[in-house]
Image 1 (cartoon, rainbow, N blue to C red):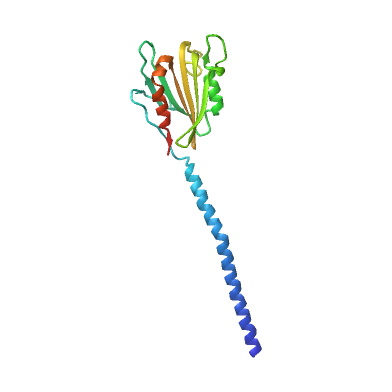
Image 2 (cartoon, rainbow, N blue to C red):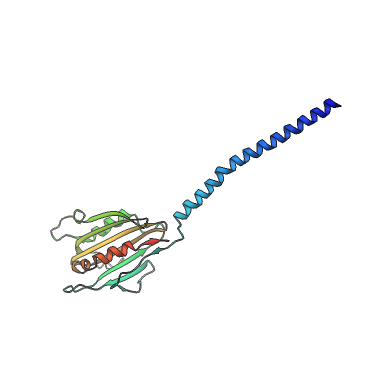
Amino acid sequence: MSRHKSHKRTLTIAAIVLVVSLAVWACGKQGPTATSGMQSSAAQSNTNASGELHFKAPDGWVTEKASSSMRVAQYKLPKAEGDNDDASLVLYYFGATQGGTAQANIDRWISQMQQPDGSASKDKAKTETTTINGLKVITVDVSGTYTAEMAPGSGSFHNDTNYRLRAAVVETPKGNYFVKLAGPSKTVARWDQAYTDYLKSFEFK
């Protein structure tokens, strides 16, 4: 009888040790998993695709009604003294995966400018990559004769001499936004600082 009780007590102690060991093992497994989950949530919040691009139009720019749903904002930049035309700036957004790559757009914008001497516009264009409020921004600045199509598929093209084009691709968690400013060189120069301030106002939140 004594031997039976001793054996029973031994089994009970062994069972308790096993339960405690399993509990400790389980806690050890759950710790890293919970931490990884929190890290994942934090990482996702830093690239929250449900945000929007916020920006501020500089004083002096005239806000116009967007002529299409792909135009987030559209402005007229009043002409400088001596110029016949105002400059125009449009902020485009085509969708999260639409609109083409940054380089494809930079190349296309450069091709819309022709040089009077027949040289390649890409050799005269100035491109730069910077970061604004955590957003990667690729810019291009090129002058010449502006030959872009007046409207997609219209078959009619600009032929505006002494023009300047400044444009940018703004990479956001929601996809690329595209900024395009075009107008007479003197007028664009008038708004150089305002354009820079406009880009610096971009913030995704």
